[in-house]
Structure formats: structure tokens, C-alpha cells
Image (cartoon, rainbow, N blue to C red; front, side, top):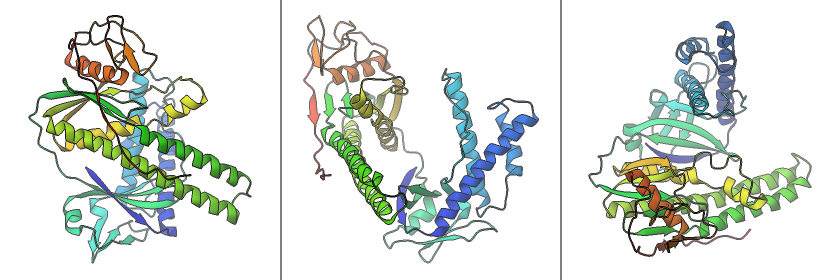
Amino acid sequence: MRTRKLRLQYTQQLESLNAATASVWRECLVLKDMWDYAHGYRTGGGLDVPCELWMDKQLSKSQPLHSQSIQEVRRKFFKNRKGFREKRKNGDKKAKPPHRDKKFQTTSWKKSAIHFKDNILILSNGRHGEPLKVRLPKTFDLVYAMAHIAIVELVYDKGRYTLHFVYNVGKPLKSKAKGVVGVDIGEIHPMVSYDGVDTMIFNGRYIRSLYRLRNKVIAAFGKKIDRCKRHSRRWWSLVKRKWKRIRQIENQIRDGLHKHTTNFVKMCEDNNIGTIVIGDLTGIRDNIDYGKRVNQKLHQWAFGKVTQLISYKAKALGMKVEVIDESYTSQTCPKCGNRKKPTTREYKCKCGFEYHRDGVGAINIRQKYLGCLGVPVVAAMAPPVGIRLEGRCCSA
């Protein structure tokens, strides 16, 4: 799948569509409670398959939405319920089924509701709603869209609406390369990799500076906004400027992550890597308390985004991506197998082994995937190579 975005000018119809989708979501919550009550289940109980089929017949058809757009909301609802069940089975007692009302929700159109006419995109909204018509830019590849488009989504983000075009590009050929690279994702360095020979450190200084700048911008605008009357002209002006500035910084962060991950995947392709092994960081932020400043950095740490970028770019080239538990990978000495929790950026073992801490994590992630964690790698290892991302960071 590939996604391309198109920014839209605000209209009342866009807001009405997302509000109608949120209304369908609220209806799903009510109908699920009715099903559980009728069949004697507690909250979160019940059989999802018959409930989903029953709900499909009960959902209101009077919304200004295409029938498949309504079904997509129902599908997302039960997908969230399935995720809740899996978390509960894995021991997450805090997991909750979908229960919150929403004022706005992303609206989706499947292929049968998507039409093109004279460089105009027409998104059908059924009998009770006017179709959404969008004039496409001249650079829009209409032929490719008509052949590969799978779904179109109307997304609201920080004061503006965007159309997301999702294309189905088919399954790539599997790579015949047999190399394995381990990847340690960190807050200071977005990625550190080890392929059995070389250790590559992707420097995160530029991206971290953007996170700091974003925090300063939010704090500076927050002080000004708090002194204004809510919803006054001055208040709205500052809020719009704040959103615009944050979007600029977030675009720079996203661009930096894209450049790092693209360089990494190309490097893997050039080195005949067939499998990328990434450490699983799920739940790492639970129950942490390292102080206000460190907690802020950890909660802004985009490790999930890095994993997602590596995954789809690698899979597009036919590489396999595996996510494994990284417990003790940063503490185990690659030379003697002794465990020691490092306190600095340099890992030092009593056996005399010294190496970059994140490099040790990448080495052990690879070794763990190969089933030989604790087995000595080499007597002497090449020093890690740093890759710096240069960029211009605007002032606050």
C-alpha cells in the first residue's frame, strides 16, 4: 500500500461528513451495549461475529454517507475490540474496549464510491448526502489512480482537512538475499544497526533539536493564548499561528525520519540484507518516572514511527522485517556473555570489552534472532560509523 495526500480548502461539507462518521461510531457503541444486554454479557463480552452481522442491519442508513463508508466505521469498531481482547489475553489489565464518544471521525470511501470525471474526484455519499467533489491538481496522476486506488480517507489534522489516497501496488518479489541486520531503536540515536561486520549509528541530534524547538513553541504560544479571552479574535489568531508553526516543525521531523530510514534501507539493499530484525519497545513507557525532563523526551520518542517507516520501505523491496523482544540486549556483553547495565554511552565489561552502548544492543538483537545470544561475536570489532543528518532548524 502507498498513501498520497491532498490538502483541501475548508468547507462546511467536510466538517459535516466527519461529524456524520462520528455519529455512526456512537451508534456502534450503543448497539453493542444493546447486544450485550440482550444476550446477558457484561461490558466487553459477547461474540463479535454474530454481533457484527446483526449490527450491520441495525445501523442507520439515513446518514449522509455511502453504505460502505458506514460499514468501514463498523469494521474499525470491531478491529478495536479485537485489539482490546488480545491485550487482555496478554495480561494488560488496563486495556479497555472502545467506549468513548467522538465528535469527529475519519471518513473513508472504498473503490465503488470513488469516481473521476474531467479531472474532478467525485466521492459518493449515498441517497441522503451530496457527493463530495474535489478538483484535482494538474500534477495528479489520474491514470495511475484509476488503476490502483483502493480507498480515500478524509482526515482532520490541526485545523485543516486532507484527503489520503491509498493505492494498492501489489505484493513485491521476495528478496533472495540472506544477510541479517539487527536494529536498536533509541531516543538519542533513532537507529543503530549491525549486519555482522559493520555497526552504523544514525545520529539523532538534528531531530532531537526539532523536538526541543516544538516544546518551546508550544510553551511560548501557550502563555500568550492563556492571557486571551477564549474564542476571541486574538485567541483564534494565536491558535492558528500555533498550529501552523507546529505543522512546520513536525514536517521537518517527519522529513528527517524519512531520510534516515531511506538511507538505512538502501544500505541494507546494497549489502544484500534479506532480514531486518528490530527490537520490540512496546510498553517501554509504562510506569516510568525519571524526572520531568527525561519523561517528556521518552513520551515524545517516536520509536513506533521509525519501526513503521523501516517496515514498509523494506517490505517494498522484498525484505523480511521481524520484531523481537529486546530484553537484556543492551546489558549483555557480546564477548563474554556477562550482564552489566551501562551508566554512560560507552559499554564497559570487566572482561575488557568496550563498545558503544547502542551498538551492543544492535549486536545482541541480531544474535538473539539467530539464536546465539551470549555467544562471543569476535575478539576485536570495528569501531562504529556515524551517519549525521544535516538540516536547517528554524528559530522559535
